[in-house]
Image (cartoon, rainbow, N blue to C red; front, side, top):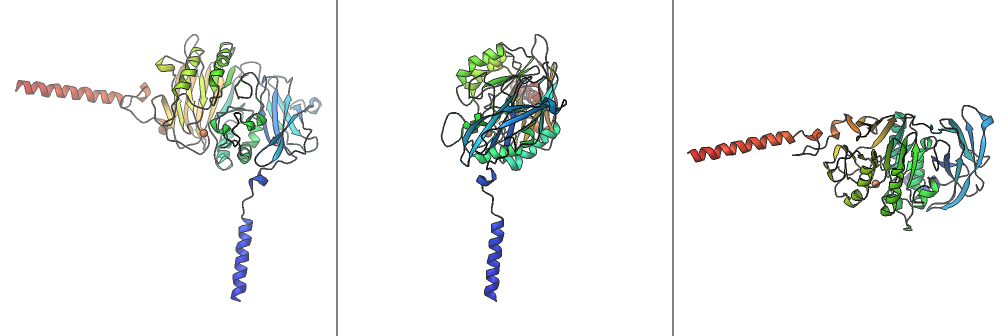
Length: 452
Ligand SMILES: [Fe+2]
């Protein structure tokens, strides 16, 4: 009897452990005939075009997309053939497909779906950009990188809940930790799935997009998954896009920075937009210890100063830092620099004096609104609470006017004896008063000694 009980117990344990076995990445992230990893991006003018990329298994060799004017209905339906390319990852063989919707009407809502003609995605909406500089807002995310399904999902959802009308999302690099692992991309797409299908993505490559087994210079995942403009350095993720009065420029700070300089100058020099925002991964002012990059600062900041770049959005340091208006080497400048992180891996803040607001050990998303002469910036935590906000206002012929607004008490940099900006002069004046008092006391003591 005892033996029967023991065997039953062992069988029960074996059954439980069988049931609890983790599904392998190969199964979990396997491509199928239905589309997955659907993502909107732009290759050309957002007023007239929209690109969409998706993945299937290799049985889908003819992929198509359908697009209709969402208000006008089925009569406007257009079918577009997608370009298909094979893709071999560490887990599977797949096909990526990209379709381009062209000749769109500006400021119009469209519905689209992608598939093989039988197996379709759901219908999703996107809106073409207005041909004028109309008010809009967008999202900006720092490094996502880790625990993408578990802990980046709530952050992305909080961002979407806060700004469901955001017109695109900027990702400042390190979308995943290890670019050669298909499961991590699977998680990234899963976490933002419904959002990427209706809100175009503007990604810029981080150093972790370069981490994969083959050591090739170019992240092969990047260019398969994201159809991006070919108006900068081809295949490097260096490009620009104009959206309703704002020029967005993506640089690649991982490699070939000198080769990007002349191109950067030309797109800043010939810029008809009122606002200019530059995004890249490695911050030129670092927010975490031991990561300062004076060479990158020297390469880029004088150009940002000269052409009056308004805002620079960066990642890499896994904490939050935001400047006042900063010019190179103490020069008067009009650019605000931001470092942020959206995933759950954190570095401590270096409390450096360039920051007027800092944050650590928190996941953030940012909502940026451009309305005529005003740019409003909000950094929020994963729970949607406002952590830091400011407004930049255009002033003809002068540098922007910066107004610091709401902030979380945790965002104030640690007081220093003589910090860099008037806002931080909490202890500075007190220290001076104490120093002067000390000197006066010392002089008095010396006088008395002499008199005695
Ligand atoms: Fe990172």
